[in-house]
Image 1 (cartoon, rainbow over the protein chains, first blue to last red):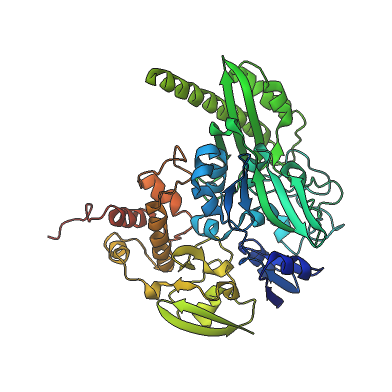
Image 2: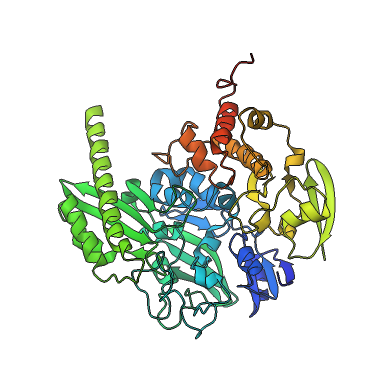
Length: 337
Length: 171
């Protein structure tokens, strides 16, 4: 690993004052240290933010949950309010990485993790993310893991996060800070689609620090699920994942949230499917129709065509499960009365 | 060089390292505690698992400077029923992953005791029993290329449930 200067930031003000081109913020280290060892990231200075007081999970007056950027993944998943009101969020965190990594990795770092496209990691092959203008080895390479939505000829990488898929479904907002002040970015706008600048991955300016993520109240999320389909039963990135929340009233969809992972360069909020579902009968056929509507724009490469059908089935199955569970809960409540 | 002070297995330790030195390399190459193993060196295999303030982490992705002032426990500082249970249940073959497996299992048992859920917990708001499925899911960050997983799970299961219920009686 290339040597670098090291500064342990005592407070946010120092961190954002000291950041400059060539420097990187270091949180839990689970992604950045790996990328530095591989020579993909080569900062000349590392600003260690891991001791900043951004570790709270707090409920604001309006019911919004404010999650500090340095909350460890495991602490977020273990938080009683998250587990009770936003099960999809706790499940998404728990389905990612391993117990050890979740004890280290932070919420802010999760947002900013880089793709696991193998061509991005292989310094001997072209990659427009790693070396803008060099080309994309994945377009004509082994691309079974790659994007089916929002990709371009310049990049077909996916965003690897599970947490972000749940956050996208929950209308989360990212708070960022720099010497110029504080800014709030809705999560679906935080990550960018590749277009012809796949190296520009987020809406974050180079001098901005992620300080918190806010999740607004969402009663529908009490009945929510994260379902992840992958090659191994545990400790693998998603082929396709679904974050969903559903409320059914009188057999019709009263509220629904849907987002997909493993399919695009950003967590994919399935707005088209949500539109088809609004007020519609809560039936398997309608769930499938909504999934197909969302995936109508999907395109595949040589190896990843299976993801389109897999995504449609996973969306449908997750919504069927939520509709069933909700009915069961309603019946239980009625029986209890 | 940066001075890093650790409470290492209950003893004060001081080491001067470049900021790029991992906690794993500081432990093995500078502090001569080679019980912690280097497997993949990219956070995928779990062989380098140690406990930081009682929580399991992979020391290969931890820069030593980030752990200044912390309490680090390596396999050299462990005296736990899991060790005998691993031997009893053949929870290893070559043994290279074992120190990481045991440190990870100690951290995992503490996490479970705190009531945490896992990816296989049906209702995430509940604190599940530590079934075999739960053990396998919670230990998925520790690979064993000899494939001693059944013995590893049996050893952890035995200790988690406070006994030697699967032990074959001595003849």
